[in-house]
Image (cartoon, rainbow, N blue to C red; front, side):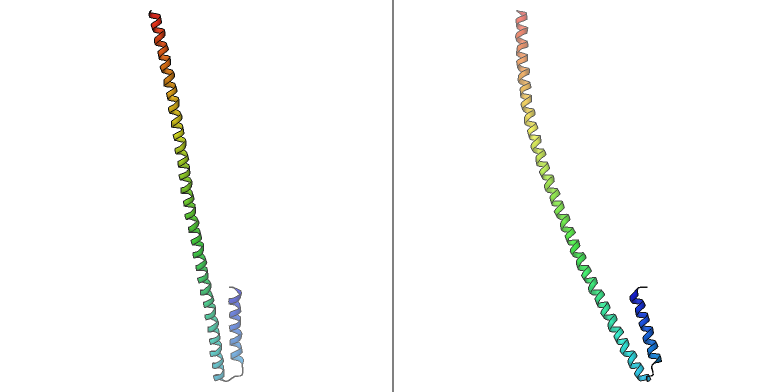
Length: 129
């Protein structure tokens, strides 16, 4: 039991003992009880309103935090997409360069093979003659 609850119980017990032991008339005692009951009711209503307000504020803060987290997630996703596109473009550029280099080398190999074939033919003709 927390301190506030203990304090409330002690206060109520003290109040009750005070009323029962006080030398007042029944009408006066009933008025005092009604007045104290109204004060207790007002106090409880005030505390309930404070709790409601605190809960509303907490809800607003939670919603704001959720909005921030959502925005961060969207920004992260966009950043990831942009990075993926950039890497994709870089890869495509690299593939194009490699393709061009492969073509150049293939042309060189074909040219060398053609010259070698011509030399072999010349050698073969000179050997027949």
